[in-house]
Amino acid sequence: QVQLVESGGGLVQPGGSLTLSCVVSGSIFSIYDMGWYRQAPGKQRELVASITDRGRTHYTDSVNGRFTISRDNAKNTVYLQMRSLKPEDTAVYYCNAVPYSDYGVWGQGTQVTVSS
Image 1 (cartoon, one colour):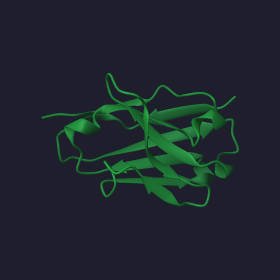
Image 2 (spheres, helix red, strand yellow):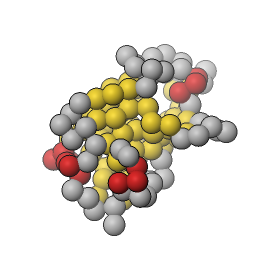
Image 3 (tube, helix red, strand yellow):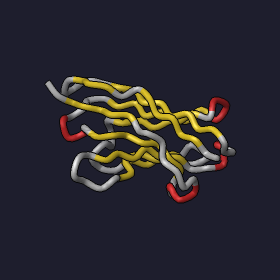
């Protein structure tokens, strides 16, 4: 069974930075495209960054230039570096395969709150 464990969230001031990590177990991690999703209160979950099995990245417009996704296949881990954070980045952040149906489960997520 696949397990996803996200960490690294917290409270940060506008303009600050955070790095999220997600460890995946129970899967041949290296063959899957991976992504970071987020869900803000009252909104649908959205994919904000993705990375293919070969390392090609893609970002939604709202985070392009501020967020960087990366992966370490030896550690079954995917990262999200977030810079110049804005209050509208406040959400619970989840990692998962892209599409998420490839794994079929979600982790607990990690809360990111951007506020002064």
